[in-house]
Length: 65
Image 1 (tube, rainbow, N blue to C red):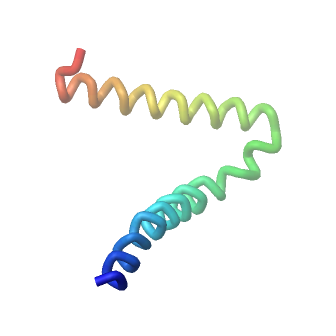
Image 2 (image 1 turned 135 degrees about the vertical axis):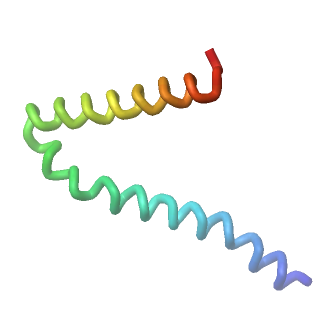
């Protein structure tokens, strides 16, 4: 029974590792763009606009406010 709980306790760490790996690989292509200030500002603006669009869309769909 101890082996079962030892194995089950490893799953959260594995899940966090997988999520961080996906995030790292998703944003790795954008890393060179942050070296120039103009493209960095444009990229940050794009991320903020995408988050705002997603946020407003979900608020409207779920009638939250």
